[in-house]
Image (cartoon, rainbow, N blue to C red; front, side):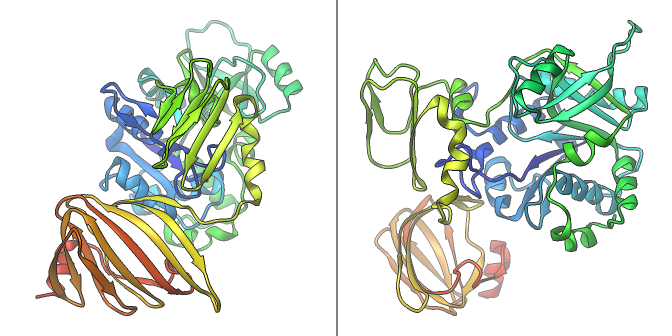
Amino acid sequence: MKYILLSGGSGKRLWPLSNDTRSKQFLKVLRNEEGQLESMVERVWRQLKSADIDQSAYVATGKVQREILQSQIGEQVPLIIEPERRDTFPAIALAAVYLYSVESVSLEECVAILPVDPYVEDPFFEHIKKLEHVLRESRADLALMGVKPTFPSEKYGYIVPEPSPDTGETFMRVASFQEKPTQSKAEELIAQSALWNCGIFAFKLDFIITLLIKKGLPIQYEELARQYGKMDKISFDYEVVEKTKNIAMLSYDGVWKDLGTWNTLTEEMSTPIIGTGIMTDASQNTHLINELNIPITVLDVPDIVVAASPDGILVASKESTPKIKDIIKSIEQPPMYEERVWGKYRILDCVLGENDHKAVTRRLCILAGKHHSYQVHRSHDEVLTVLSGTGEMILDERLQPVQAGDVIRIPAGTRHSIRALTDLELIEIQNGTGAFEENTVELCTTWTEIVRLCI
């Protein structure tokens, strides 16, 4: 069986730590068995390895998340890149077509679609392995996994099983499925023994490929990627699951949580404070997450979340945190913090001038052994000041060492790359016009290729 992890969502519900590139699954707020902070995607990938299914797994994600995924779970993890965000049905369709036309996977192969951010224990992934048997034994078009609801939530899909005699089968037939009902309808469904959908969808590859053919959509990856922007933004639950009649289900009795809001995420944090801060004893059930280099003090305020990052500061009652996605709609700014495959950066200041001129100041950390691509900026100059560490830099095919105290000027049109020998901390000031990212041209990416150009 092949496994596809969906990792394409935007980061709104856990603002200000999450943003359009650093979605909730990338926040390092959970602790592993060694006591180290890890993100949801690092936790899930570690669990896939433990279940020995990582070698059959792929991650479907957008272009903007490619580098943060590679920085957290490795550059060797196979990625299926979406040209843009189009919801889960287009993402699953693109992943299925990739398996079929690029990887030459058999139409009889079973495929399991997994969320990248559930909070589950290791047995959950052993349970997922059973879905292949369920598909083949039941001859269903789809197989789902359900867990018993703890309250009538409007956030989840509900699976209503058919009443069935005790035949010894490990699965149940599904009578109906409803995605995100009203609270009153959710109460009715729970009364019918409905289970929450765990976000798992399993099917034979032939099921999705046949569906795409019926819809007149391409089944070659490159062509579907070209037409991707024309596909409807609709979830797999609405487009496929609610319309499919022949569905089987596997129930799961273990721990399953969706850590999609601050109040649910903080329930699984092992410490009330991450980062620099002080809280008094009377601040019961309060959590503080601080990514800034300034202290935050909370005095006698219970049941709140305080989160601070370069993107903003949030102070909210835990009960109100689910509203954050709607509240921040009016905030328009690019991500102020990003992780890349070579390290990370934080925007310290952005000054907008006349005639589309701007100056952006960033603090960069390039990890030892990592490097930028060999690139050229068409419309802006850069000045780098090395704060700490050692490295080497190529400027227009000339190799030179860099160390703390060095100031390097990079005029527009200059080919350049920098490589860290030890962790490099730099201040970078960009001056110019237009969109800096769009006006940057990558010439090559591997250090071997870059050095070869200098010989």
